[in-house]
Figure 1 (cartoon, rainbow, N blue to C red):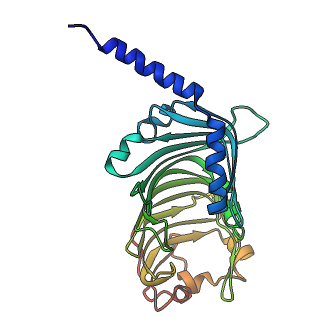
Figure 2: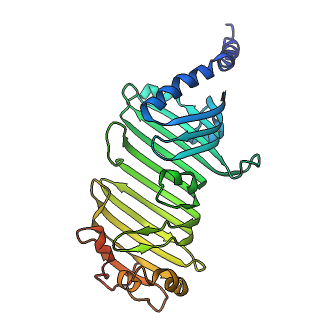
Figure 3: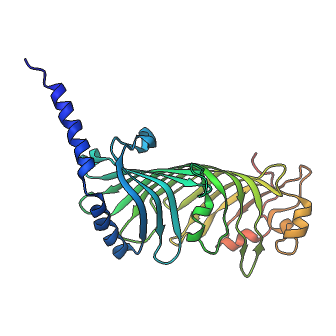
Length: 319
């Protein structure tokens, strides 16, 4: 019996190479980006669109065949923009057999555009959209590696962000045809060089605070928000804390029930110079313990402003 495997493999490879060589990518770019801009308001600019391997994204996010592009710039309909020096998109065709649309995405961000190969961060993602014939929901798994928060600062014009994130973020049940929060979110993130944005309203004013490091593990499901733990700062930073949060949120994302407990330490000189005339730390978080930390446990009483009241219980926080 004649061996058919060799000729079949050669034919398949030849077909894929010919397809990648002759496929009119520039025409495809125009057909996709034009309607995308008209329907969503997002403008996308990119250079050097080409076929390539998506294996660089790894087994979690990648696949054999992918699309690559350089110097990708995305601008939003109202505000915000995002840039990516090297972009890889890998469709996962096998997912069509399950009625889903799945693809992997990888993005490298340059630290200094004038220095070739200077990468400040990477973003990898796997996204699933379903059903394939009438997309209505989206789920995503994002992997961050030293991803600069300044890349998303323009989407939040009232917040000054600093620092870089590493870790994983899972989002399930994003509704594409209606407003509302996703069904479920989980995160396990580390940050360095982090600073909190300044915040002010009629009741409180808090300046930006350099925290240096941050560790956040938590989840959101069915309106329940949990941080366990939320750690920030160190011995050398002006503020340090270890906090646990369990909040019930309304449809607008505002806490309506739950509690927050933990411990927090502020450098006395920093507190005097930056917080004393803005936040009554003794009132909000309790008196300083011999350990140098304020330890507190507080419950929400009707709305989030109740967190500014004196702790109902003067109990030691969980370690």
